[in-house]
Length: 70
Image (cartoon, rainbow, N blue to C red; front, side, top):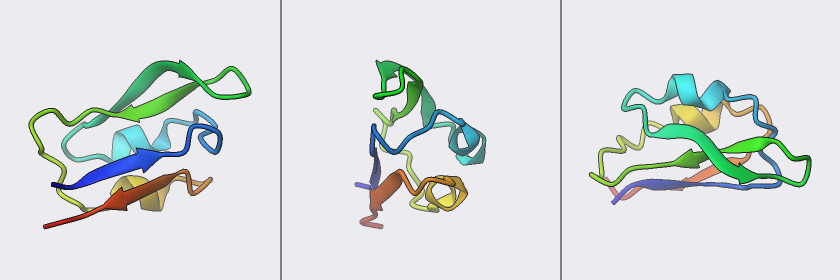
């Protein structure tokens, strides 16, 4: 199963990654970081992540890492 993790304190809530996900698995969370910004969360209940890493490549703060198990 492919999945990503988002470092809550590195995420600056720019939301650039949300538009990059071809499966639309990223969304704005109700959780906030230390700056009070609503961070991004990964939501993939049906295991649709393609492991394309487009979200991680687009993140300017390198807040996204993943485990990709093809």
